[in-house]
Length: 354
Image (cartoon, rainbow, N blue to C red; front, top):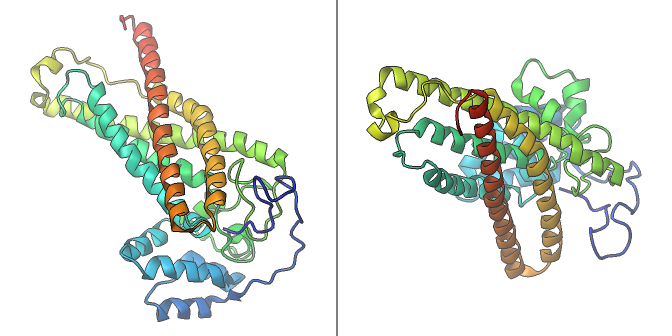
């Protein structure tokens, strides 16, 4: 992930954003597309197409290639990670930048699934598990996708070649060509515009000048807008899908509802736009601020654990997991309360008692 030119967040002397700026010199070792392909072939791996394009245009950093091969050729999850990295370059680029990223992603996704299942099971009143199965599954899947997307967006991407995001390969060389992964890299995976970091407490990466506080503050606001847009879209698609399944179920499989639930269910589908807007507003403000604060705390924890041996690393990772799971639980309750207020307001607008 780099950041060697930036002073530590605490201790070590100096201002948080002080230290020498990158002076344009580069002592990194790079390999072209032929060498990168040969490295992969020798280790039984496949070089992803987007990485090949960057290697061909400007070269790929050797240290990044070694990390990529370590992830995709060794360990019990090597096959899965090879598929994941090829399918989702955003995840790959974050994992190559931060050795903790995959662990954090697993905690966010698996922890949220557990909390969502427990929360949904206790919030469905007297309904049986099948009565609102479509909404239950939609809530769980949407939450998992959103949590993973938010963490990915707020995490810095590795510099694969000589330019952050491989801009030279994908813009100067005009290699977009309608391929979705290349478009997604330009829009989402490259470093944010200007000198803005991925989050307010992010470290400066390879060949990146240390961030000024004004750009860190802008990251807090800009990423909130980005997260709100993504979460609103996820919420809209999730609610729309569950509403469509609900309509089909009521028309063709009405006998699948329990008698007690069938007597109380409303004839119209739940609102579609209001939940998506509510989710967007909540995640773009409350959830965004909490996630960025967690990233700052984790940076302090990781800094304290570095060089402290295996025990320090275990304690640090356990602390990170505890913080993230607690945040998901607290944030989930805050959002549930907000949704209940929204549902009451929608009911009043329809002339019903809440």
